[in-house]
Image 1 (spheres, rainbow, N blue to C red):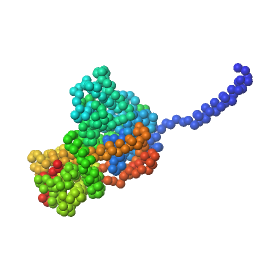
Image 2: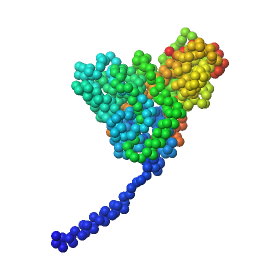
Image 3: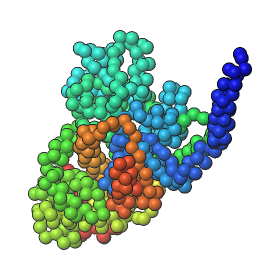
Image 4: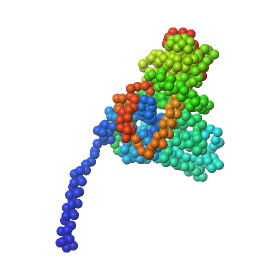
Amino acid sequence: MNSNAVKRLYPLLAGFIAVFFLSACEWHYDDRSELEKIRDRGVLRVGTLNNQLSYYIGSDGPTGLDFELATQFADSLGVKLEMQPAYTLSGLFPALERGDVDILAAGLTITEERMKQFRPGPAYYFVSQQLVYKNGHWRPRNLTELNKDGARIAVVEGSSHAMTLQAIQREYQDLIWESVKDTDDDELLKQVADGQLDFTIADSVDIALIQRTHPTITVAIELTEDEPVAWFMKKNQDDSLYALMIEFFGKKTQSGELAALEEKYFGHVDSFDFVDTRAFLRAIDSKLPKWEPLFKKYADEFDWRLLAALSYQESHWNPRAVSPTGVRGMMMLTLPTAKSVGVKNRLDPEQSIRGGAAYLRKMLDRVPDSVNEHERIWFAFASYNIGFGHMMDARRLTKAQGGNPDSWADVKQRLPLLAKRQYYTQTRYGYARGYEAKSYVENIRRYYQSIIGHEQDQALAIQSEEADNVDDLQTIVVDMEQATPNGERKGDGDASAENADEKTLTEPEKSERPKGEKDSDKKGN
């Protein structure tokens, strides 16, 4: 190479060296731990799914099992919570891989495939995978019949259900199934209910919840044993955040708070009545719109939907309902109870609803303060049905047997004992049809869930029509001081939009029972 060529290369070489050193000066290694990054940022970013178990917008703002747990975990870290809900599974794990979120909290089962790429936290509940079909459709007797008569089976792409079908296909090689990307389990379940799809696979808890709004969904085959559900993190050598997550779930389990949350969100769906659920859904469309304004008018601190569920349990929203024992009206009040709350005409629907709400409020105010805020209403409903004194007897039995008298999950198991001589002879107020009170409360909870699910279906239908891309994560920032999980009483933590573009949210004893009112007087239908 001649000297002139070398001279021409000098400026290029000098420029390259300058750029290299400039870049080196600007680049620096971030040696902060994952926990330090979150605390410096002041925000815990959590990816979740928008559904009626993990996360949704309720009457008092954001709520859901994973939302409540994430709220408490962020609070334990001393940071704000930023929920990033997705409508489909396909957006979640890529967001975690890219570092857009710190944790996935979306009711995700632990699978071998997921463990290869991501790090699961402790299991916080268990589900089994079930094959479902529409009631009235032919039921497959075994896995060889899934494609009988050209039947279609579809699951969400990348889901644990797709992995289950892949395993099944290794044994049944002729099995044909579809993997759908831009959808979720709820959508496929609804397609089965509508007759658009023959079969799909979903988790047992999700199926039990969606049956409250789509009762034709029926379980055909149990495909797996119980599988653990957990949160997920990226795989790395940094244990700072992971260690605190382990500690967090350990404390929640030991304190009983985790069991109480599970009871709140799906403790009432262990039984299912197809005929009753279908009748109730018809009543939501045909009867509820007429009475909804009155329930809202007199609900006050209650969620009006709970008052509506109570009324349906009592009278099936029949303002002229009368029982053989003399209770009558929308809220099935006895004459003494009606007088105690200022109701002159029990068959007047407005008076009855106002009086029923007032009486329920009296029962709620007497529930001991030691009971968790979101469970107090269940104790109040039991008192509405069998009387406050009998409800307190059930609490005393619970304590005597080593259970937690402040836990609805524990107390409801003892309510039926009030009808057994060996137990009610030990109580202060004697015999009561506690088994009816248990069913009474759990029915109200299921009706309440059906109303919520019905509203969500309507809201999601509108959102799906307006959304440009439902796979994109939305940012929901929660103010830790104002956000309170959706409870049975309206709080002051209602969600309010701060940024429309990003959809950001700041986020008796027996003598005190009205005289003359017997256990049979408060029997629900």
